[in-house]
Image 1 (tube, rainbow over the protein chains, first blue to last red):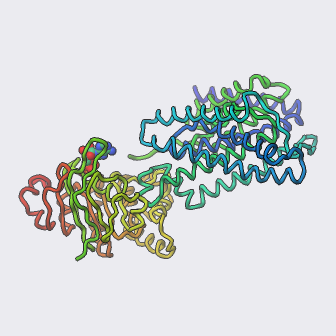
Image 2: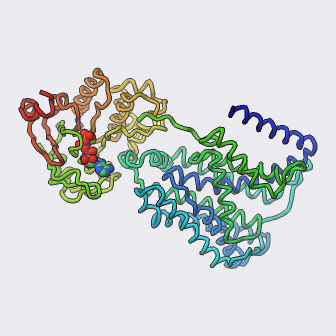
Image 3: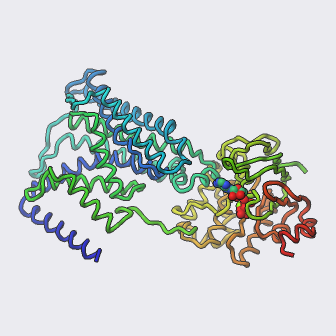
Length: 329
Length: 237
Ligand SMILES: Nc1ncnc2c1ncn2[C@@H]1O[C@H](COP(=O)(O)OP(=O)(O)OP(=O)(O)O)[C@@H](O)[C@H]1O
Ligand SMILES: [Mg+2]
C-alpha cells in the first residue's frame, strides 16, 4: 500500500520533470543550476543542525539565527568597518578576510552558547535544552534587531555579479564563488570527521559519552569543537548569502534555518552526507518548482518542499541516508 | 608489595541516593583483586568513581601514590587506568577495528599499539574474524570480548573489569577467567567485579565483599572461598 503510493508519487514526479525537460530543456538546466546554488547554501547551514544533533541529540533552534548574525557581521565587516563597496581587488581581499572573520565569529558564539546554556542541561530532561534553544533563538534575533534594525537592509556587494553562458545556460559568477567557497569547506569537514583523531572522538562521543571518557576522550572539548565547526559553517553561509543576495534582516535565520533544518531531517538527521544531499535536493526542487514553465510557482515553494519531506519521511522515517540501527542491548 | 591503587573511605552518591557509603580497598602491583557483593551493593559505582566518571562526596583515591579523585575521566585514563564497563558499552555503530583503535586513543606509540592489537586478537581470535563487522551487530559474548580487548588497547597499568562474564555461555565464562589470568601474567594488575563469585575467588589473590555500600569482609580470596558467611551469601552453599 505504502509502496504503491510511493511509486505513484514517484511516477507523477518523473512525468512532471519529463514534460518540462522536453518542453524547455535550457530552462530546465537553468533552474537546476540555480537550485543547486541555493542548495549549497542550505547545506552549509544544515550541517550545523546535523552535527549538533548527532553529538548531543539537541535540535539547536538558534542555529538559523546564528547564520543571520553571520550575515550581519559580514555586512558590517565589508561595508562599514572596511568601507568596501565595489567588486575590485580590495573588495575581494576584504571578502576573504570577512569569510575568516565570520567563521570565527559564529564559531565562537556557538561555542559560548553551548558552554553557558546547553552544557549545564546535558543531564536534564530533553525538553529543558530544547526550550533553552528556542530562547537562545529569540535572544539572537533580538541582537539581530538591535544590530540590523527591524526592517530589511540593502548592502553593496563586493563579489562579481557577471555571468557566463555555457550551452545557453547562464551560470553566474556568484554561483562559481559559492561553489569555490563551499566545496572546500565541505571536503575539509568530511576529512576532519572521518579521518582525524578529533573526528573519531566526535563519533565516539556521539555514540556513548561515558564510554568515550573511558577511552581518554575529553568529551567537553569534543562537544565544543563540534559547535565550533557548526558555527563556522553557518558563518560562511551568512557571508555567502549576504554577498549573493545583498539584503539582510533579523528574521533571516528563521526562514533559511527552517529550510536547512528540513534538509537535515530529509537526509537523515545526524548524518553529514545526508544533510548535504537533503539540502541539494531541496534546493533543486525549489528551483524547479519556482522556475519551470509547468509548475506551481514560487508561492507554493514551501508547500512543495514540505510535501516532499512528509512523503519521504512516510516512506523512510529515518531520512534518506539515516539508518535505523539495530543494536543489541 | 606496593599499593598501585588505594581507595580510602570513599563515599559516592547519585543526587540524594548514597550508593557507596564507606569503601576502602587496596590493589597491589601484579595482583588480581575482586570486588563481590549482591546487586546494588555499590560495586560499579566504586569503579566509575575510580575512573573519574563520578565525583566522590568524600574520601580519597590514590594511584601510584598520587591523589586522583576529582580528576576528569579522560585524565584518569592517561595515568594508565582502563575500564571495561558494566554492560560493555562498546561503540555499536563502529567496526570492531575502530573500537580497538579508540581503546588506544591516547597512545602515540604506533608500534606498541600494533603489537597490542595483535596480542588481543590472539587472546580473542573470534574478534579477528569479525574485525570489520559493526560492533553493535555482534553477539553479546563477542561484544564482551571486544569490551575487554578495547580496555587492554589502552596499555593499562590497572585494568578494571565490571562483570566480564555477564551473559556469556559457560564455555566462554571459563575462557574469560583463563584470559584474566593470562592478562595478569603479562604484568597487568586487575580489579575485577563479578557476579560469579566462585569463579572470581578462584582466580583472585584477594577479595572484598561489598554490602549496601560498605566493605563487609575482606581478605585472601582462598580464605574467603572457605568462609561460612561468604559461602552462604554469595556461593550458594
Ligand atoms: N545513575 C544512577 N542514578 C541513581 N541511582 C543509581 C544510579 N546508578 C546506580 N544507582 C544506585 O546506586 C546503588 C549502587 O549501584 P551499583 O550499580 O554501584 O551497584 P552494583 O554493586 O554494581 O550492582 P550490580 O551487581 O547489580 O551491578 C544502587 O542502589 C543503584 O540503584
Ligand atoms: Mg554493577
